[in-house]
Image (cartoon, rainbow, N blue to C red; front, side, top):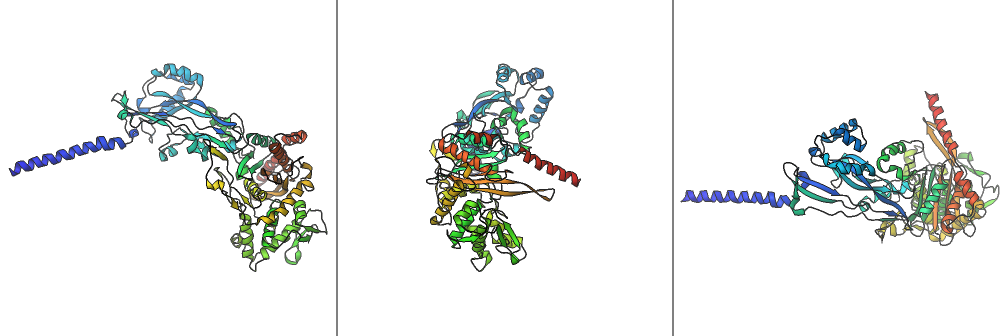
Length: 629
């Protein structure tokens, strides 16, 4: 009796364990298992349409067009008429063999999963292949959308799409090898928003790889979700106009709306037509663009170009002096053609303010760009506390409160922090005792100070707002909904009190009334600005070589209730008043008036090329390298 009971008990336990295991494998794990891990499951993807991109005025900047990819499933490939297949695809037999071998012998991908055999099939070729596709087992056509750009502008802002590589596909299960992903610009920053979600359908297959209905009655099937549309902050007409004015030049223009931080234009020159990086022509053109180390058309000079700010920086030096109480609007210095400093006043910084031997006050010092005035103010700021380090860090922190020396946090994927040094920087740099005169070039925006055009444009917006700014951003709406991220909607305050700004703003207005920008006034618009000319050095084979100066200008307009703030850098452009000032005034006129009346000036700027200056740099580099060899 006991033996029979034990036998029944053992049979019952084994049965329960067996049933439990079957339940686990077929019911529990069956529903949570990844269908792609089984060779008996066929997956069909439904790629969603990528979101459209518009400018602030609802003008379409990026749309989609249909693309056809020839896909191959390695395990299903069979013998076929190679010559006919190659003829339909317009490829050679050698290319066919190479592609097939690569697909079949790929170790990282499962043989039952589809891989791209040929990308971006032409529409006419697709029509011919579709009729005869049944003859070529293991191949099918996958439709997907690729980008189209109605206007050949703003490539640096929009970015482009590129194929997901093997490493990316391995790290991110949402992507398959060969799919498209955003690279650079808003395509990269807002990839998740624009991409949408691809749909999936799973099918059962028998041992002959024939489809035998939906996998688990479609439980795992999903519908494609279209990507969301973006409305950018840029004005495409202003962007196009800025790119036109920068023809034949190198540099960057950044235009910001002070009241919101919205980027109205982000120009880099030289640039390229974004359409050349679409479809089958992408490979050829990307090689040309990305290997052009001379012109660097894919390098965004508005975000990544690092330059000394030059004379526009004097405005910040003045504001810090006012905040620290070492100067006021009536404080004056005598300028005798420059500023003497150092032991026994042997060092000399030249000045061209044309007020020789006369007292010069803050307003005129800004309008006439007096080096002596701001060098004296800088020295007083640094020497105000007993310890140089404290005074220097006070100065540094004030300057950084305008967003300089920082990436700013805008919603584009590239940039440079620039450099606003602090006391630690110079302690590490110099082994001897240093002070204000050691770093006196900082007073006029030279020395170690490095800025980007977007940083200076942002600082200009802060001046226009009398002490605050919004983090610059490029996206205005997502799927019709305004940006709510506090990062872009909350004011960032500078460390300068609002009461110190009016005198500086009056001085900037004077620049365009009687100063260096007086020849580029716009009728009916009060422009406030500051021109700059920055010495330009480069190192060629370890030697310091001086090149033509950079042309710089910051400005905002109108003076009251500003609508536009901007910064422009023109590499090797010479005086700020000769190139940067006219381009700035044209941009302001275009945006605020909607048209430009000064057609002769416009034509002059459009056709003004600095290519000769850029060729000189190449010749200098070649001659120095030749001498070295």
